[in-house]
Image (cartoon, rainbow over all chains, first blue to last red; front, side, top):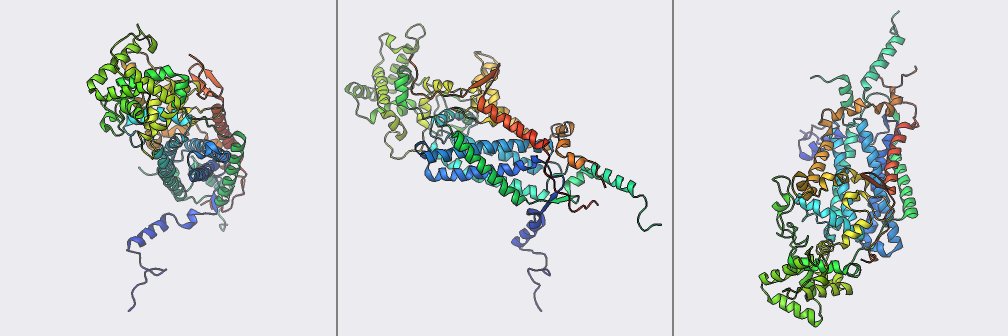
Length: 231
Length: 327
Length: 56
């Protein structure tokens, strides 16, 4: 008498935690859905590229930021190469928020939260909010006049909220750790969740897509009144 | 309530017409395009980097202002001394009606301006005889005596009917060692020593915390003048501005707008506008928090979530899909 | 009061309409963002022909 196989096409449904997790993930996001070769034909507008452009800008922020991290916050004041990397970091942030703005506005006008996609919308807004915070920590990390001014001004809002001691914009050490490690980690997780949710639910169909399908079915029926095979 | 066909279409995986599209290729192209764009922008425009202000600069450009602020620190009347939590108990902080989160949190980053900004830095250096004697007299005196001297001098300097901010016009009085201490600190700032000593908080080898310097620097007119000169004041949309000829944080515009409202910039001494101005930061944070919640929970808010249906920009976006098909 | 020589003072040009004040670089950034949105919605997207015409 042989025991039932654990894995393979003839296996029983798993009862182990890891097996159940695997089955759940496979059901929610199989590889074909994660990396498809096709997309719905309504995804045909330049507005759709702004999500991936935002991701690309984020990649540039991280890459340029990594170089700045390896050389320390004071490097770019004394090195022209450092200034160039600081400039790349500065402009990728500008592009990041520009592309994200267009992406957000586009998704709003498409009411992209429809069809159980509320979590996608929410994670997107959260990504924006955390990014603004990450930007603030970066600005106060500059160790120049702008960082002095911003730290002096921003401390009041944060202190009024009661978080000024743990988000101390005048403490360079704290800000460096939060800017280089903590917030990028949070953004990474939120963005990953956001992108995976898009793949799980697919790109939202157009408003009135049902009506379009109906109209097409009706016009097809009108064009072929007699079903084939019926004489 | 049964779902409409449209709702079911939105929820179910798409089974309608598709086209071949390579999102990995799209991602790679997007990354290359953005990388090239970033390199070009960086090479052509560079980035802003105005050097940090120093106490040496303050002593050089506005020595009288630094002198007066030092007296205020000793007297406990400066902005830092009366700030309240998280730095000290010199004030109550901002309240939103009955809620005062700032006070609730308590003192977490203890700052004692008189000692941290003035006495301790002076004590780390060998001072001229006059200043050394003043230091001895100050530290030997009781807290009450110190307060009496400093408050008397601070009041005398700021008397609108008397010196009106000009320390040279102060009448004689019992100010103890305070004038000598203030003069000593301005001299220390002038030499550049204060810039090095303040961060070390009296001799620590390592330092990454600049709270003391930021607070002290902002206590007078020097940082403020620099902010104004560079158009960075909150009530001139400064929150979204950058130094130099560069774009700032335009995405902060919805936040910045409130700091420009007359309601939060009132000169009134009493009334709602006066309260709003004095507690502007927490009021504005509450407003921003509200709008943020609106944005986050938009999918569930009737009316707001229907705006895309009422203003059909989507008809432009999906116009190809809506076109009747020729068979 | 003498001229402040130790503070940076190289602000951008600011355009002011009453209560609103915006720097030229910021205005350009905002206009670029709006333009990108309008172009993205209006410009035709190179469409491939449809494949699986699974119109069930």
